[in-house]
Image (cartoon, rainbow, N blue to C red; front, side, top):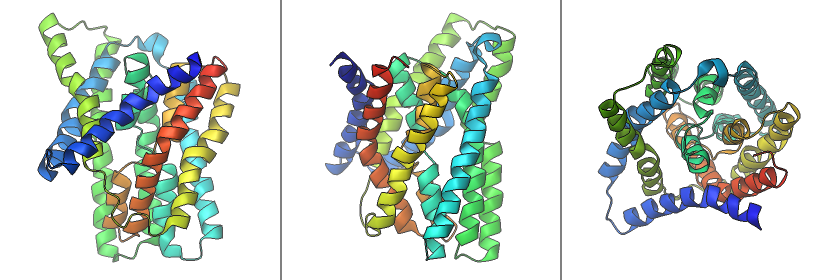
Length: 315
């Protein structure tokens, strides 16, 4: 029972804040403009400051783990490649493959990942290192598979590709991570005034991000293509973590490492996958359906996986 309570405490507060955001939007307390501004504030200011603060305070000589970073990098390559091969073999309508593959492998590692890590450990833990190893690959692989099945014209595709690659280089979260590395290497201690200011801004990131996600949550026609939506959701929430987490345990990863890897493999599909699929001429209905279903079901799957990991004393 103790481990079950631990699992509930690790996941449910995150989803309850998201539900609060959804309810506040439902009663028109929050507006679409708020969601847009909150997303920008979190992505461009609060989260970068949070990861900068955590990286700058880290002892990289002890905390940086090449084994972990390489596992994230190659793991991302493998589950993307296998998912794409599976889709090519089994999906007859090739125009659906891009949305299916992206939805099945691309999780919300940054925003929800940091939220879960902070809720469990009180800091972002090893999530920033996982982001460096995997998030650029998420974007690159998404462009590749979406281009393969896109219905849009070649000119539009090239424009989106250029914009996406530029977005990787100028990603505020990745910039925040790399900006913190020199401070960590030089062991810089910030003045109390600066440290408190950073803590205040960083403290905005998790609650504001979760409220914005909940407020922006909409089903609409999202579940029309429910068969492929279910298959992609099972791959995202069950198959990928079911394969890679036991492998990670076997390789000796524990505690914060495993939590970061759980986020990498088992987090619900990121909302940006829908935006990207739609802009690149892929199936927006299927893309949004996967986002909706994985977000709803992840409250159960993540709680269960954390319970299992805690039960075996791996976290």
